[in-house]
Length: 311
Image 1: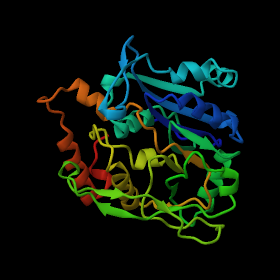
Image 2 (image 1 turned 135 degrees about the vertical axis):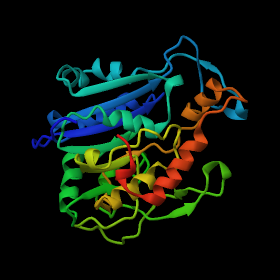
Image 3 (image 1 turned 90 degrees about the vertical axis):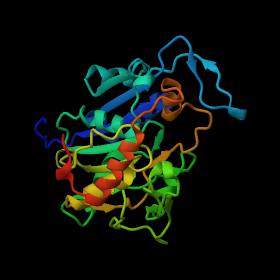
């Protein structure tokens, strides 16, 4: 791995699956960053690039032919704000076909390989909104946390939220797990959402038991000490509880932000999902090794130590 820099640089991991909101997410991330010159994006873009693509599942279970997906990287880099950052090498991209997608956890593993020694690691989804100066404020919260190895994370409020108003009240914290009841999910622990446990806004981040994949801030040494497991294809539910366990048993403390800095598009009805592509690529009767990933996830959550992983 490259040597870690001490220059205030931020590596922003973004994974996109056939997401038309991705270009706007990148534009707003740079527009509202306090130090956009310090922001470096690792983008994993998973798109249908064929002449005839398929939509997500529509009303009545129908699926229709649609055109190619928007090219997030190309659209951002050709935009007035994006051109200078792309020309400066601040956007690194791995492009994959939709049929090559191995799920969000594997995409985050691939994105982590685009890290080039930046001081701070941040992870978001590709359909986010941002408060002004979100980058500097995220790091300030991280540095204010009472721990030598803190991680700041939670489920952000929906994208419709007024983030300026949200910055005046305490952020929701992620504290509610349940055991999955579906045999398909192998009784993994699922996280049920964030709740407002604090009646007043706090100056110091509070402890939380779990991290969320859609907003996570840490020292970039996390990528060395708790590297993403490269053997968990097709995992969606389960990535957060596994990462939480591995971080905690590697000496990291998890905290909620003191207030919300980002918003998230939680409902994208009728938009393509990676598991729909799997069903099209692997027709009924053809098996993908999803159960092995779930068993590995389950066992790793029990063992809960990063030294058992091959990197």
